[in-house]
Every structure is written in C-alpha cells, then in structure tokens.
Length: 535
Image 1 (cartoon, rainbow, N blue to C red):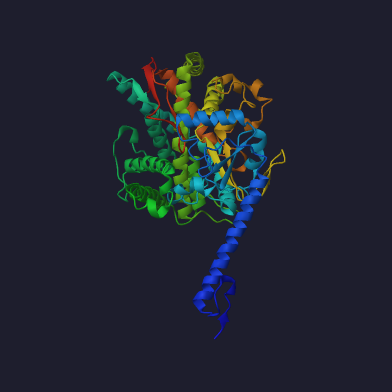
Image 2 (tube, rainbow, N blue to C red):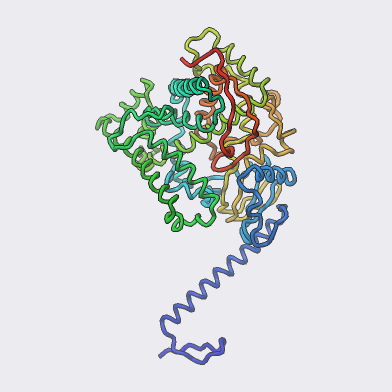
C-alpha cells in the first residue's frame, strides 16, 4: 500500500487514501488560487497609486455607504468631483478597488474601448438579466457587435418620422387628463407619474402597434395570450421598481436568497408576464406574415408608414442573411421598452422642473413654439419642426447636463487600459464613467451647478470636448435610441409649454439616483392651463 509522509505536519507515515489525496490536491489548488489572487490584488494596489482616494471611515467597509442613493449622497459625490476632478479611486470593502472617471480626456479611452475590452460590469447590471436577456444593454463581445449593426437601421430617420403622430397623440391624452385634474382642483402633479405613463403609452404603440389606453386606465382588448396590455405596463413599472430596490439590499444580491423573498416572487411573476406578452406579439406577427416574400411584405408595410419595432426586428438580417431568433427579438423589444420609458420620463420631468425654476427661459421657449405653430391647426409638432426649436433644444440639453437620467455607467476591464495621462487601470478592475460627475466637473464647466441653456449655444460648443456632455453615453456603445428620445422630448416639451405654465412647489425635490435619476416621493410641480388645448 502506498504510504504518504506527513512529517512536515509532525505526523508519521499514513496510507495515501484517494480521499486524502483529493483533499490535498483541492487544498493545494485553493492555496494557489489565494496566492495568485493576493499577488494580483497587491500588484493592482501598487499600480493604482496614481489615483487619489477620499478618506475611508474604516478599513473593513472602505467607502461603502459614503455615497448613498439620496440627496446627501449626490452632494457628497459633487464634493468628491470638486476635490478630485481628474478621477479617483474608492473601495468597496477592504479588497475591491473601483476607479471613477469624471473628465472628458480620461473618459475617451474607456468610452472608445470595444465591448470585449470593457464590457458592462455584471455587479451593476446582472439583476436585469432575467428580464432583458441578451439585449443590447447587457450583451457583450461578438453578439453585441452583430446585434448593434443589425439594429442600427431601426432608428433611421425614415423609421422615426411616422412616430411623430404617436408622440403627438400620447401627449394630447396626457394634457387632456391634466386639464380634467386642474378643473377638479388638482393642480399639483407628480411629473414622473404622469410622464412615465405617457412614454410607456408611446413606446407600446411604437414597439408593438398596440394602444393600451394605459394613461386612462382602460382595458379595451385582450391578447390571444389572455394578457391585458395594461397589465404589461404595470409589470414594467413594477420590474423597474423592484430592480432599484434590490440594488439597495446588499444581502439580496445573491439570487438564491432573493428568489425566496416576496419581492423575488413578484419579480419572477412580472418577468413571466412581460415575456408572455412580448412572445405573444412576436408569434402573432409571424403568423400574419406570408410564407414567402416576407422581406417584400415588410418593405411594402414600411412604405405605408406602419412599420413598428417588432416589424424592424423581424426584417433585420446579418451579413450572412440570418435573422434574429424569437428570443433575441424579445430581448431587444424588452430592452427598448425598459430603456426608453424611464430615461425619457426622467429627462422630461427634470427639464420641466428647471424651466419652472427659471420662468424667463420657460417663456422664451413658449414664444418659440408659438411662432412655429402660429397659423397651424391642429397644433402638432411635425418632423421638420424639430430643427426649428433651437432654444428649446438648448434648454433640454442643459437639463440633461444638470440632471442626467443615467448618472453612471459601469465597466469591468478585461485587459489593462492605459489612460492618456499614463495611469493604468489594471485588468479585472471595475471602472465607473460618472456621467453626473463629468457634467458637474468644475474643470469642464464654469459654475456647473447653475442652469444656463446658453452653454449649448453653437458658439459656446466649439471649444468644448464632445465628451463633456454625454447623457446618452459615448463611443461605440452609446445609446442607439438617442434620436428617438430627443425627438419625443422635443414634441412633449413644446406642446406642454404651449398649453400649460409650469410652476415650482414650495418643497425642493430631493434627488434619488436609482436605475435613473428620480426624486424622492416624486417630482411635483404646479400646472396652469393656457389658452391652447389638445385637439
């Protein structure tokens, strides 16, 4: 029998049983992994010495809890940006460094890195995976590159132009509801609540060609899958809230714990409902397509200006002529519904708040819209009008600078990344592109906390880095739907200011950065109807 000497442990010779050998091999492997990890961590600490760091309350927690998702956390983050405008390092616990970049010159390298070199970090986005699958937001590598190329035509001007009617109709419904509420004595409105429903209403029409009447809480029809469109809208709102809530509950970051909780059950149920709805639409649309000549059928439909996002996803093909699978179509449609409603609602809510605080800018926007629509009936915004609203566009951009809907983007480096100043972000380290920090960086913006639309006057843009203003991210992974979002914001803001005066309430909103930048308890404003009314 083979014997094993354990004299180095103070033990005599023992029989080398398979279990003992397996234990020793496992322990050796684990020890080797720990040593490699320790050496890598120490080397990373050495290489990251060029990044300053704020004082840590204690070594165990690092900077955890220093920047909570509250107004106080936003204030603390602003202080950090003022102190370290060229980027800094924070610690999540005692062993995990995170690099925060907040200057255009430093962001450029990370923003231009490929999806393979700097993919989205799973810690910040993995909670969305069961809902959104491998859509553009969460996919990486070759799959992301292929889908990005395939989906870019979906946001061509010719596809977006017919959506103008949808945007006008949806905002008309919202304004009619506001008129009724004011008549009933309710002139204080939560902008997030109303605008989120309005953007979901528009998106459901643009993506699925379904009118759920969700703004009126009506249930006009039921899909063959027995899922009401209004239930679908409610499920999207619930999923967004549950993901934001889970981010703040560190012990529920583990899936096996989360799905044992009531919130986990609700998340799973809402995911099923959303997926069933989208799958039903895809199957219904496929069943209506002719067995031959599908491309010609969809192209003819496009000429009739009735092409929605599902149609575009069914039509798109890669270089080899291969289309998207039903699972891929569902992931992209669900991703667009998620990204398109909350971010646009946030942007619109905050621009109305900023214009309520600055009535002189609000009135100038209103006059610009009046001049544009002076002799037009009905009062609707058309595609060619978008370029005729320069000051309103400046006001939107300045609000997106001051209150960016997405405040941060997280990446994990898969290889060393060298910044322009020579500092290195080592492989495996998480890097945050702070959109909020860049937009509030005093080295980039004079008086960054002041709302000043003239920053975006064409003459003032010339000397500024294009990466100083990145509300839709930057580089190859920028937001594919940014033209869609800006178009909708211009239509909604123009018609809102034409028909209503927005006024601030006594309480200042407290910013709340979750998946998007919200306000605690809602963003409340007073509205006063003007002479113009929705047709």
